[in-house]
Image: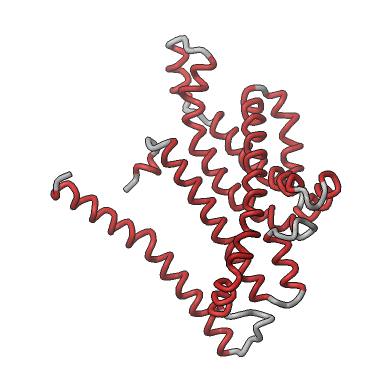
Length: 269
């Protein structure tokens, strides 16, 4: 690669860093500084709202414990994410193909998405056992099912009619239309749903652990520390949960860039 061709790419990377990342980093740092200042100025006790600096110290001291718990919870979240997403995609294919299935499945999907976690978690614990990770995966699967299914159905059905007419003019089969037109059109919708579901998955796994789970799980650790008014330890665990959620989201973004590099949102400078 020549210097002349490398220079525009370097300036593009610098411009992207300044435009997309520096404002977010600056706002994050200002938020932490404001938080620290509020606690100091108003003399808020640590058992009510600890300072970010105190949370950072406890995180360094307890990082082996909280990260071990975080990985357990992450496994539950990923397992439920995979189960719920796979079921949603399968149902979406049937819903988009046959109206009868759509009319029968949609009310159940809406009802499942409306059920709160605090109602699902005790039932799942009774079915599978409170310490069984399957109970947490079941809750997560129900939470991610609806957004993934709805977005997949939209992507499979909201196709440009001119593209369908062109394929039919070539006597393309239904399978060829699905593979060459409907699936590529559905991918942006599907990955948008995956991004939303990644956050829902981790939230669902942590909250479901409040109602019982293995002692080395993140939700159990947070609830125990909060019950003993050790909120600094609880915030350190919340920090780990946030980092895992961001990492899960970025992983989906990376897969999206590899799967559909042709999309305008990926090619945009």
